[in-house]
Length: 282
Ligand SMILES: [Mg+2]
Image 1 (cartoon, rainbow, N blue to C red):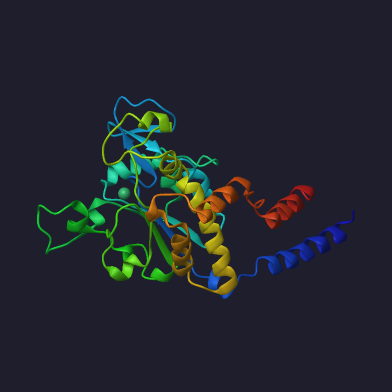
Image 2: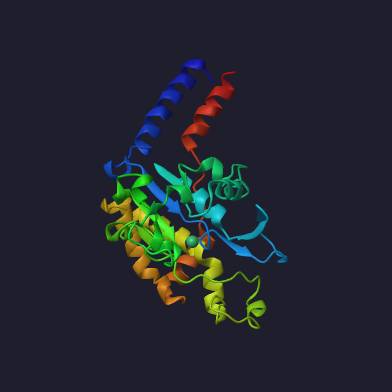
């Protein structure tokens, strides 16, 4: 093929890609997903616990929740999406923990994080009593991630941990969390507040991040099509999932099914065209 024809094809493909990646106004702003850590993406287990997806951080063992890697990878494929972590754990614990959770390209959650906020970033509630529980004495101020809260969603297992009622509108509550059991049968003989009572409760807890992954995909599509804000679109998903009930419903089942059939879009067809062009012309 002549060089002139190749160059013409290159510029034609540049033009086509430009058309494909033209972004609606609503997508030009950065979107934020902020993950809590404890009981949201990892759960501490007993020191003698043996099982899969266990990491050790500063002498403690944690179960890494199923599919957090896939969830983060799919979020990162979305234009303008940033991932942050905000936890009441110490900075050294949080960084060490996030460093041990690896995506399929070898990067860790620490590597891809936009911001990692820790215990020292919590806001002290002056009026709280020393006897109050932790989440009453300290609050997460989401404006430390961005002041544009309409484009921010925090995934959290503790109710009312954010600074004020306005910020609650930007929190997706994942419902009750449980002690980790590899199989539901392991939970049957345990007692206590954080033991799943039914196989449904146990399996929803195990598959929650997969369900959320699909729900976040649906919310993102909604923002693209309707121009609805990111946090509004997620709050609609939260209402449909109804995690606070602790049980599966038709919508969460459908989202779980979708997560099993989701095929990530083959990344950057345009960049492949360019790299092939460069290879040909080396
Ligand atoms: Mg938590």
